[in-house]
Length: 106
Image 1: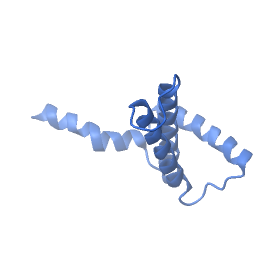
Image 2: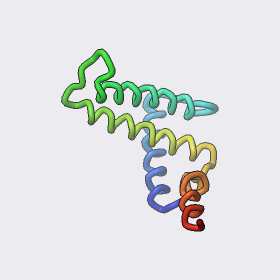
Image 3: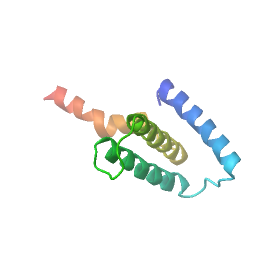
Image 4: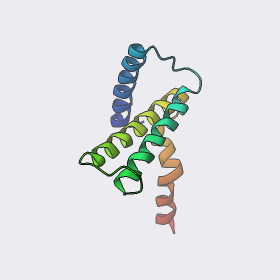
């Protein structure tokens, strides 16, 4: 894993530890996946608001809320990957960036 992503994941995990301790949350089993799904729902709501496809009007902070929900999803994804022992840099390289190698080879 790249140093930058490793450092970010460590900081995110530290925040998650504080959150879990403060709210007495047991983060075992499928907690990370369920929390990621919850955050995806909040991201969807924020996106619908920004794009004018919800009952509530987009206020001055709509794009800020969208950015915050994107951050929540990213951080929960990093925590899920960490919990599962997944190297996200390697996974992205193998799943996505390998297409660039294929393109260069042709």
